[in-house]
Image 1 (tube, rainbow, N blue to C red):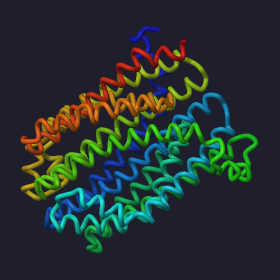
Image 2 (image 1 turned 120 degrees about the horizontal axis):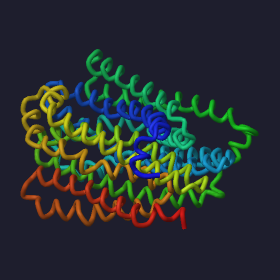
Image 3 (image 1 turned 30 degrees about the horizontal axis):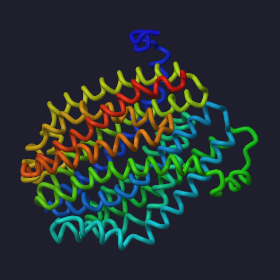
Image 4 (image 1 turned 90 degrees about the vertical axis):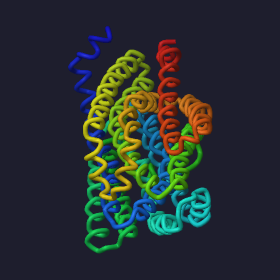
Length: 446
């Protein structure tokens, strides 16, 4: 089948839309939540409130995203088990992933103080920004076990190609967060503490919804029993999951090193700069979560292709996903070009922050074009459970491009951070795309 026939194949496009659309809609609620946080806090009197939430949420995002392998590895391995019609393997992955999530969540709570002190020591932010960052983290950290369990449950639902179930988990939870944000911060006047408590309640709500949806899926399996699921909660037979988790953890560590460096170094430039970067990075997240919806389609279909040993399914799915990703990226770039000023004004009414954000808005326009391919191929390699390739690509982009380029351009201040981030995304796109064309697409055939 030619590329043209794939792109215009009704059935394949319908399958992509059925899998991707619920995740795009639900994923957009995630950065929308960040945008609401930013907008609510950004309309308080001083920039240091927004800076404190930006710094505090970055610390927690660092923890959650570093442990994002819980979702990625679960999705990839469950998708392969789903393609092979292996219900027992799917249930075992659910139990073992949940066990790892609970242990890591408890560790995060126990180690919260040294982790917080370490993170604050790496930032040159003002005393007030650091104070409100600490206030935010000390509340939000208590929902970490629920947040990590949500990653596992979401990954399991996606691997079983149940995107509508995953969609409702995210939409309901983030709607709770947005409503409580408005109530706690504006209604009760709790400021930064209100934003933190809203997020805690949202994480718990997300877990309640996800657990209900997973239970419904489990009851559809033949020969399912709760006793057997509990027996799967052991470390025996977990080597494949742990190995994949290790590689994706290193990949996530590099990714967070890049984004966290941008926040922490920007804090040293000034309160207005860290606040402006927070506004722009939330819009960048809007891009990533929308494009990740298409990447989830690639994860599910590539994983299914590997499990069922169908190479043509993989190549057709990747080709179609690439087309839709590119189209979405172009639409985002055009939208940011035309509406960047009102979008920034919507997120903050602090004039100095608006002016600073506009100075760097060109990077917002360019980011979808340079980054869409890396989001897509992250999905491809998660579905194929090729963690080492993702790890190596990310290490090359981080230590071969991002930090060296920033070092060479650091006299340019905040421009150096944004140029380094754009080059970092581009290198990920090039390295993963090249590996797919030269190696991965031939492996199932060989």
